[in-house]
Length: 241
Image (cartoon, rainbow, N blue to C red; front, top):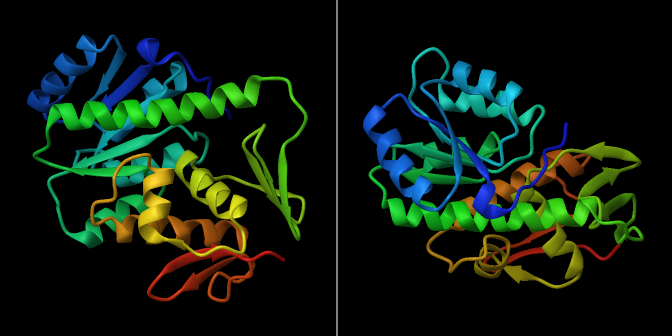
């Protein structure tokens, strides 16, 4: 199932949190930016709204009744590639890694600055809109072919041995960056700054988790990867096979 990217000012954002004060705070800032908003208080409500509405981005709290954010994120990723920003009062790296591992694009710790959250929402929507526009424009397939791995920039699809694999927008951005620069070692900092389009700030775990998820999807043996190699102490590179 593919989602349609809207113009940023008209984007629809689904906010999911059982704390009414948090929802109200976010609502004030997002309405001021002109976004359309949907609200849910748990994962089950979020899935119901998502099944009936076109949504461009989801803000998803972790700790909620009935269905928490982690389970909801996993279910959302079964059918949707829209950006997901997870919110949580937990600040340990292991908690952040858990959220990113199941398909979230970003993890924001509570308490957070509403202005920072808005900036990150805009960043994700810009990237998603570029992907959606590129997907809908008629063009010759712009493909990067590395052995049996095919990355199609025009349709935003990836296949391995002719089998399509589903990547999140952020995973695709990381893979595309490495593929374009195949044979060249890219530092963790460089990968983050290009793929996330923001300055690097102690985000090595974020890049590491995304690399691991990409390997799980494109490598036959993720423990002994053929495509994405780790260059210890420096970063990662895509092999020029």
